[in-house]
Length: 280
Ligand SMILES: [Zn+2]
Image (cartoon, rainbow, N blue to C red; front, side):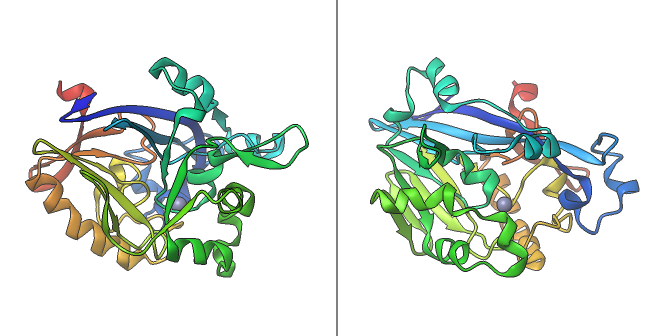
């Protein structure tokens, strides 16, 4: 998909089933289950949606999904079905070595797992050896000194090799990263969770990661049990939704299992997600 100078390609790195209670927090199952189906273990199908961006000679990957470093037991627990970046990038004429920039919203295992893989000697190594990795400094600090609740959400094997290779670029707050590409800290899901905005020739696309993980999460108060600061999630959504509509921006939802790119429009005084493929 072209948008001004940007060429965007959705990379669905994996599908994974997360517990419905974890995905919808305090919302009763009798309510969320009307909108979203689950399997007999109460698990909801989600995807780890990554984005390949080509612009100004750069090959940028936003997020890296679950990756391949999972035991059989864990794969079964989440019904994880993944693909390697070597396979998903090939149709776009790229190898993992061609990626020069990786942008990360935060360092949870389902967003940064694909940054590394186990080498033949069983130690983690970078999947994108030539890429500089961009993350908020506050998120980096939190991942290395996690609160008790966040301990299972982070694994140093996913991101420490980037620092060891001198490939880490720590951000401090909002700002422009490259011409037309900026980051914005939303907080909420993690304290330093960030989203990415792409603008060219008056057209805008947002990569929304876990602040809007699926169409069902457009309702500001439908927060996930995973969200560390739920009130901040609600505030961020209330702040961002009017802007998305005003800018007529394309929005990429981090975990929507199908058609994750679309517009947010108001219908009957409610915000609705209109997937691109259905609109076109
Ligand atoms: Zn997360």
